[in-house]
Amino acid sequence: MTPDAEAIRVFEHAGWERAANTYERTFATATRPFIPGVLDAGNVGAGTSVLDVACGPGFVAAAAADRGAVARGLDFSAAMLGVARALHPGIVFEQGDAEALPYPDGSFTSVVSNFGIHHVPRPILALRQAHRVLCPGGTLAFTIWAAPAENVAWKLVFDAIRRCGDMAASQAPAPGGGFGTPDDCAAALEQAGFSGIGTHKLAGVWRQPDGPALLAALRSGTARMAALIEAQAVDAMPAIIADIDGAAEAYRDEDGLAIPLAAFVAFGRKE
Ligand SMILES: C[S@@+](CC[C@H](N)C(=O)[O-])C[C@H]1O[C@@H](n2cnc3c(N)ncnc32)[C@H](O)[C@@H]1O
Image (cartoon, rainbow, N blue to C red; front, side, top):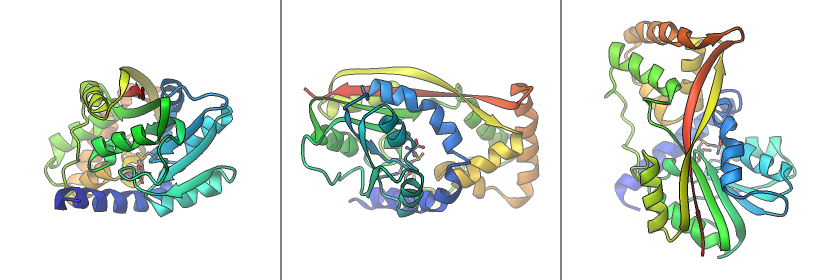
């Protein structure tokens, strides 16, 4: 692994180990609305043999099992796997790296990953591994977040930090892979050997009581966003929180904040 890739892996691993304890009640409430979309794009149904890559607490694998699939989950974070095994004792979860899947060729009819692939230092390696472990005719589907301009939770935080803090403060290594757009995903799927490639947009809603709760959820339940928030100067935080709180009120309904989320699902088939 190059030093850059190793630095990303170490940073991501430490971040998700730290986030695992709170993830279910923090960031998972943002990722779970997208599970039906990634399972549909991955053709997951009764009888499918599916691998959930970067499974975190295992909600995708559990939803696949609810559809009648035979599901397994894989993640490199022991802490995440501990949560997954406690929540879903009937599902097998294994520790491993998305860049080096510990399964023989042709093991699964579907591989899915909900907001996992863009955290891997070299996403193209993860896509090639997914291709390798799929049977001929099998499908890979994965989600990425849409750009902050259309993904409101991220926009609220980035705008506040731009106005009141320092967007350059984080010491996190730059992400690998350049997976910012659906076109990036489609190009990478083609490079990894997939055909029948497609992408489409998915919408979700993130329920939060108020702006400070939104910031707290991102601070404790993520890796890269958490590093940006943690890196802000202590005396800038009150203004950042007030900025988010004010702007977030535009999304209030009778049950609290309903913050729009946007993602893309990308998929391809192994010939
Ligand atoms: C945003 S969380 C997504 C978790 C889950 N899929 C969900 O839908 O909420 C990202 C997950 O990717 C895992 N991850 C990041 N890099 C990985 C890698 N190289 N190999 C395996 N898992 C990885 C993290 O441990 C974390 O559980």
